[in-house]
Length: 262
Image (cartoon, rainbow, N blue to C red; front, top):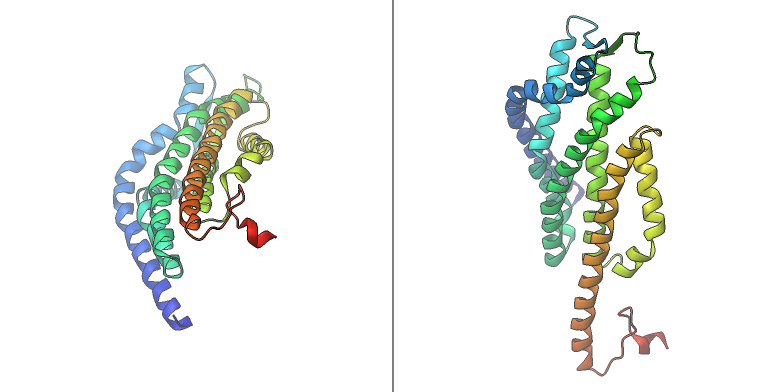
């Protein structure tokens, strides 16, 4: 495929993705009020606890800008299966048929994992807001700009969502032969350290409970990905051993050709 063909294909995928997001933007507009109410619930809880907490709009257009930002965020979530598939379809021509099927499986797992991660971020959001508000004297007002609070909440949800997708990415790399399951499992110490650092950066350092609530499912997903990769490697090695047995070829435990290594 020439460079011009690649550009035409890229434009086609980009237009489809943009059209899907625009269509989903309509649904996002009607859902924005409900989503905004859910995101601002931690601030409402502070008010119920007796704190002078409120979300303020700094200028006359802040309300409209906030609604558009929330609608776009919802639209990206709703249209995620379509634009993720378009990204994969753009890369798929250079892959084998089996690798394409693995990619489709990755997308099928990535979307619910991303949404589950966003939900986990929303679950810990009240704890984070409550902790950060505790550093201010109780007699002082806790006023938040709508834009800054919305940016903080959305970035948290997106970051945790992406973190939940990483184990599925490891499984896809294993299925296409880039990394073996034992290599993933051997790196568990580094993986746990990275997960803890990620959870610590995403949540306030003093909020150990929120950090644990984010880190625990990510650790379980990591070991689950390692287990799936190891089972897949065993099945592939068994199949290859049966095929090579016909040609009297010995295999090392890692699936490589022992005679070739000599």
